[in-house]
Image (cartoon, rainbow, N blue to C red; front, side, top):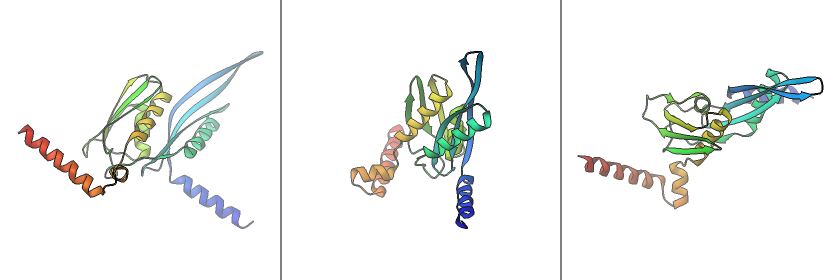
Length: 188
C-alpha cells in the first residue's frame, strides 16, 4: 500500500518530461433520434524534445477528455528520430500519407523551423531546431502529421547505415567528407 503513491509520483515525473501540442480540434456530430449529439475529436503531438515523438487521436463528448485520450494515445505510439548534432536531420527525406505529401530538408545551424502548422508542432516536440519543410497536396492536419511521421521513419542515421553495410561510422563519415570536397573542387 505504501508503494502506490511512489508509483504514481514516478508516473507523473515521467509524464512531465514530455511536451504536448494540440494540433487540431474538430467538432463532430452523431445524428440520433431527436437531433444531433455533438462530440469533439482532438489531434495531439507529444515529444520529449530529445528525439522521441508520437501522435494520437482522441474523441469524447468534452474537449478536455478528448485531449487527454489523444495525449495517452500519443504516448503509446512514440518513435525515435535520429538527429544530427541534436538539432536537424541527417539527410533530406520525403513522406506521404494519403494525399498529404511532405518534403523535409536538413538545414544549417541558425535556420530555425521553417514549416507550417501541423509539421511545426511535430518538429518542436521532437526537439529539432533547424529544418526546412514543405507540404504538398492535402492540407488536412491528420494526413500532414502522418506524412511527417512517415518521412521521419524513413530517415537513416549514419550509425544505422554503417551497421547495415558492415562499416565503421568514421569510415562512412570520411567518405562523405571526401565526396563533398570533390564537389567543391569541381565547381571551382
